[in-house]
Image (tube, rainbow, N blue to C red; front, top):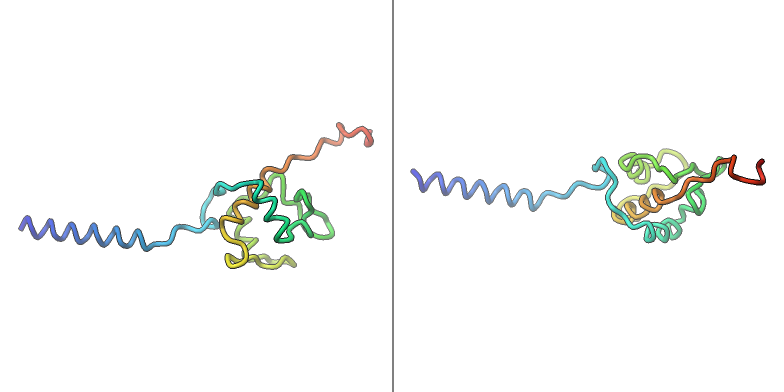
Length: 126
């Protein structure tokens, strides 16, 4: 009896371990917080994928071309979901085009943007 229980426990443990190893890790879109990314690499990717063409070099956006993306981007889950399946004129950037790691780097670049100076601190506007 003891051998039967031990054998069953070993088989169950092996089955669980095998299933865990085969299960895909959650995609960044499924994560609630943003994955770690490299802002410097993200800046290069942001330019190479042409994001600047609509959103500006500093992700400042324009009412004529595309919304502001930085310095405080929308939540990671919403950002990655929209990039993968946009609803307006933006083309979709699937995992085949932009990997999850590259998207995390672009998000890190957007987070690293500095806020513009307050109007009161701009001499020409006084």
